[in-house]
Length: 202
Image (cartoon, rainbow, N blue to C red):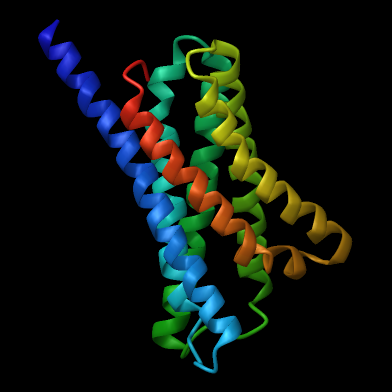
């Protein structure tokens, strides 16, 4: 029993750490995006892309670390959430390799970004939206911690707004809203980190 409690403690620690990492790096992403927008500094988009990639990769790990907790109470939702989270991680890794490769061998990403990057971003956003929806609903249904479910809905609302604007005004316009939505998502990730650390039942 002591070993089981120790393992649970380590499990809880890791999913809270992942959301702390996600929130911190996404905050850096937002700061760089605003610096690029408001200053005369000619910063490469890579300076914003790297912390953003790290942040969302950490959030995927955070979701996967939550999987064992909700798999017992909502198995179908947890499996679906994990599957879409993995799909999102594949798209994110592919985009990261593309961006880094272009930066090393082609002198950087052109603006506007290539259609392939935009397509991968679209797959990532859609997959992440579904993954967060599945996990959020699982927590809301299980009633173990509804506050976690509500916080998991924050990225859903943010990415949903980007998709709606993208459909209406074009995908590039929708993606450009990340300068605002990423700040909101960063706050939600940090709140999840604090809540998961505090909540002994999660």
